[in-house]
Image (cartoon, rainbow, N blue to C red; front, side, top):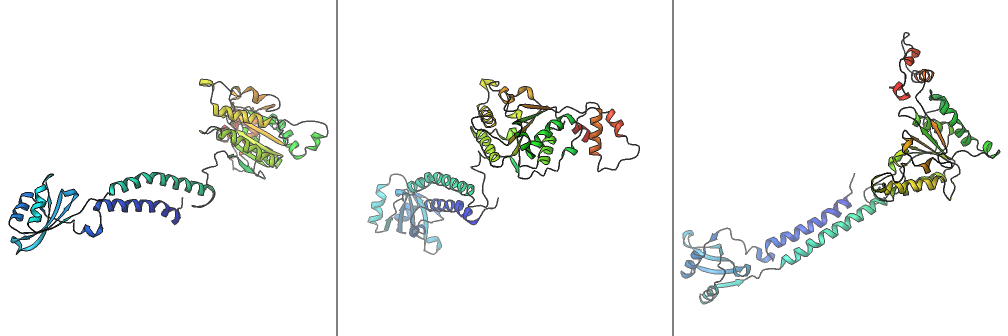
Length: 385
C-alpha cells in the first residue's frame, strides 16, 4: 500500500509534538535557566560547607525546591579559577539560607515548573487524537480519498460474486462429455434463456432453481460454465462460503445485494458453488444452529421465491451433500429440479478421454477404450488427472 506525504504527516506530526513536550519537561523548565542548571562536577555537602566557611563561594542557585544547588566557587587547586559544582542539599537545612545571606553571597532560587500536569494532559489526549485520525483515514480510503483507489473497509455487505456481462467461460456443451443425461436436462434452461417466447407462448414455466447433485469431480461446476457459455447471458458466480462472515447480518446483506444486481441484468444466471456451506438444515447445530448462517439462508429463500418475484433469474447450485440441505430450499418453486451428475460409465469415460486428448499427441499403441475399461468408478476429474 502506497502512502502519500499527507498520510505520513498525519501520523508523524502528533508524535513529534508529544516528543517535544516530553523533552521540554525533562530539561526542567525555562530555556534561559537550562544553562545555569548544568554542572558536570559534583561536590559533597560537607566540602560545600568548608568552602562556605573559607569564603570561596561566590554564588548559589537553588533548584528542586531547595534539594539541589549549583554553586560557583574559587578553586585553589586550579589557580583560583571560578568553577561550578552541583551539590545535593539535605532535606531540612533552614540555617543554610541565613548563612548565605549573612555572607553576602549571590543567592537565587528557581521554583520547579509544573510540566508534569501538561505532559499528563497531552498524554491523555494522544490516544483519542490518534483514534479519530485513524477513523478519518479509513473513511477517506473507503470514499476513494487519501491513499489511492476506493477502499474495502466499509464494503462488508456488498456481494462478492464474480460478474460477467458476457459469460466467456470458454466452455460449451461439446466440451462436456460422459454426462449426457444431465446435459439434456440443462439444455432446456439454455433454450429458455435464448428463446423465452417458446415457453411463454404455451404457458410453460421454467424452473427457478436447478440443483446439481453428485460426487466431487463429476463436472457440476463444468456444467454451469457450459450453460453460461451456451446461453450468452450475464453470469454471476459465487461460493456458498463467501456469504457467511463473522459479522451478524453481513451474509443476508450480500444475498440481497446479489439478487438486486441480478434483477438489474435479467435474464441472467446465478451460480452458487458448494451451497451446502450456507443451505444446511436450520436448527441442527449445537444450541439451535448458527444464527448468522440461518439468517443468510432465510434471505436466500425469500429472494428465490418470496413476496416479490425474480422472473428471468435462474439459480444454479452445486453440492455433493444434498442430504444436509434444508427442506425449504428443495421444495418446488425454489430448487424444484435436481439434476444428478454421476460418475460416467464406460462409454462416458471414453468420451471424456477423447475430449481431453483433442490437443495432445498420442502414440499409436495407446487405446482410449482400454484405458476407459481399466478405470471403473473414475470421475471426469480423475480421468483428466
